[in-house]
Image (cartoon, rainbow, N blue to C red; front, side, top):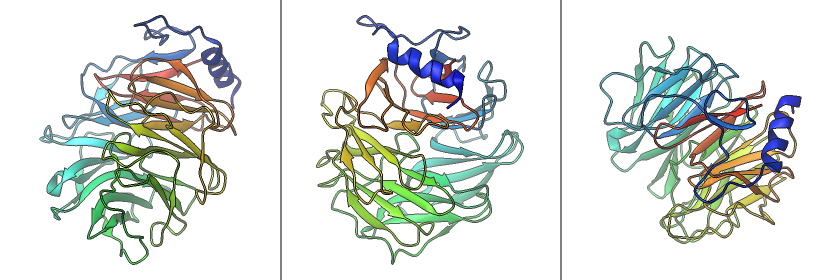
Length: 354
């Protein structure tokens, strides 16, 4: 972990808790350690977030909105595809300041993938779902060429879409190696983190809504899968695992709970040290529903989890969590060069100050 990021994490950990109705989030433009809100000029809700480095980040959200910054969030440019205001973008994967892929969710043709190679000046639709039974939730890339997207179960199994050319074309993978879905089971398009990868071949899929909340793992880029029960509660369409993060192919964190505001989420976190073969409940979990999670760069033990009621920090690999901010965010991500970003409702996009 960089010295600056360590300082930010320690400052968040040691900061006095906010008074009722307040948040310790710093105002945009200040140098206080913590989330620093950036001016987006929109009220869209950004559940898709793809920071590339300290300067460049992409965000995708409601009303067909896509934003891009190349100056660390000091300004954002609206690079939304034309004529798609009815689409709900829930995931974005960016390769650099010019190339990005966005995923729109929904039943049938509402699920689409679009790609840009010129910073959002022009977009090409590379996939449109024509099966009314499919509903695509999340997307992940192993590298600049190979990626996957996942749909809720069709004919009793999750459907996996694959690309080998950076999102220019896609094909549905055979489902022979996919375990049967549980009755009522599905993914949650809440943060772009229900399908995540680590390394060149490993990928994990988060589920909820069924009798148990499961995490599915594939070690061959989505051809064959194994399913493991997590300790995060399910048994209701609003409960389950909402977000995953793996710092390598073995060590992962799962967060979730019940997204309804009036329902508690008593066990909203879990950890694995064996690639998802087994999951252990966090000894001190996040205190409420969390939809996004990210490892701090170059750290073996520090991570952030976010949700509508706050941000939590762990410094022991997800075993214990402490709330360090009460602002609302849906997703969080960090970059190899030491920057962390979060986004959510009402146009909120923030950077972790250092």
